[in-house]
Image (cartoon, rainbow, N blue to C red; front, side, top):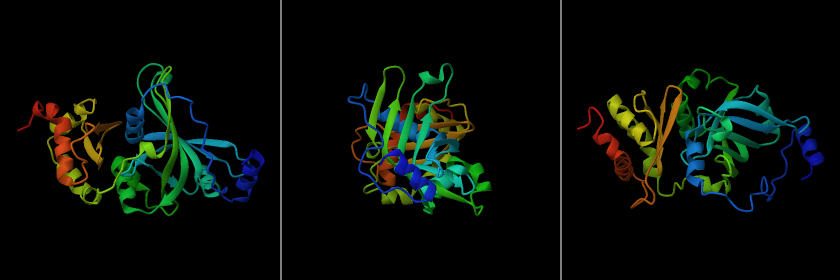
Length: 274
């Protein structure tokens, strides 16, 4: 679809016809294997730059938004219907989300991930719960009439892991397979409560296993068959289970075993551990 057609669709408020063409031309060859890094950025980055297409002219429009993830890793957003980006998405659901890892020094030396796809509102209760656990202050306005939760369906992603480290992936390759995980997802709330009832030091040990500062006041905010999401004031962490695992962590019992195996060296030495 050429530029004039896109502009016309945006101006008329009609979404473009679906296309089988990729969102962008992928690299001829990835320069490193960064799928694990891409998945971590997807799961652990709490805010990102959302780019939409302006409905009047088709120009790119970027804005900052809070981000959480659904159980399979798809980005979740809480958007106001009064915002430019929401009105843009109603006319054209295509968008991209830039997720960047913070840190000291040159920002361009840190990895970042661009996820491209289509966005749509969702009234799924699990999506709402996962977003509000990651961003509890959003509960103050989440029920305002003009706000709604949106889910981005990844179609493609570009990872820049630093100098000479770039890779392109299909959207599906970044998502977690939830086949057989119904029992685990149904028990998510109870499992998180178990973890958050642990002493602060043991929750810190879980964050240490994820490579983060154990001294912060961490809480568990989400889980899936591949790992655990943690949050502390101004910080996030993603504890990834070892792969390949003996068996998929798709039941509460298997998930507890996988968590124990991933965090055991840190939990053993944590104050308050048995």
